[in-house]
Length: 341
Image (cartoon, rainbow, N blue to C red; front, side):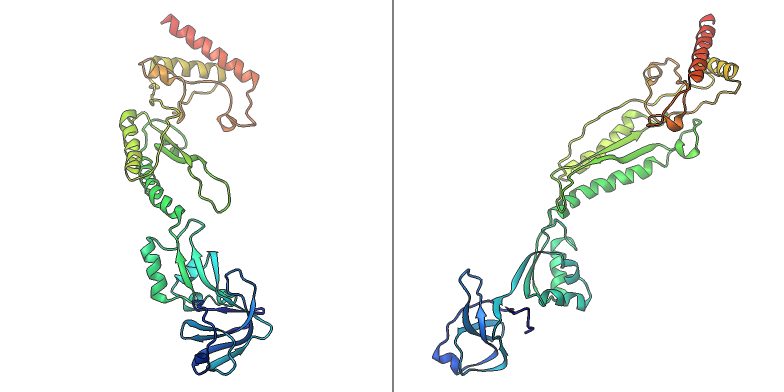
């Protein structure tokens, strides 16, 4: 046994059997003499010898004339039961295929004989039967108490949902619209996961709940009802599998378009060029604009105004007054032209 900071940890069940005349005639595997025993019961330490045979502490008392294969003089030291580490992170080492890692000498040298895994909510191997099998297959230097991590269980429920959403995202974002939009990458349909995510912020804790957003932006080529059903089918599958899932629709609207050949578009383009001296360029906006309410009802609608998209909706957004005046002139000319026809 190693000399451990004035302390001996007994790696066997602590079975207190007081010295008897019979013990003197027995031979033990190990005898620890002259130590101060702290037995873990809460009682004060007491002077005693300890005799061990195999994996059992057979005698705790005064041993004056016994024989043993090994004798340790523990004068001035404490003799204690093995310590239990109730919050250990050695699970990955003890479940590994590396023999030296499984020996965990750093823990043994501290007198630790039992470790409890999983209070942080995770498991190194899942399911729990496979984790236990890994400990048994390679053997461990300590007693092991694996727990089912609540984070692992939550992950088993939530990760399939995440996998399904990611699969849907990959499929959706393969689609492109034939409408003009720059850059070309922006022509793809959009399914954005986790643009906003909220959960607990405490260390070593899994929150009781978390929220995340799913932003599905449709191109005009796609049907809202069909795509909505596809998304909700994924959410319903997760709910059927046991996920406590609540869904709130924050905003919803149909995609729409107005052809660049529509009289409104031609008139607007003509007047933009007349006022600004540059030809107009039509692009599709991936966001929800109020003009969709008109387009949904078959009324041609386009969005036009001053300002730069590169700084819009940000802290440095600005609009030059001259640009506002020119935009107003374009509107006035377009309205007058349409009213004349």
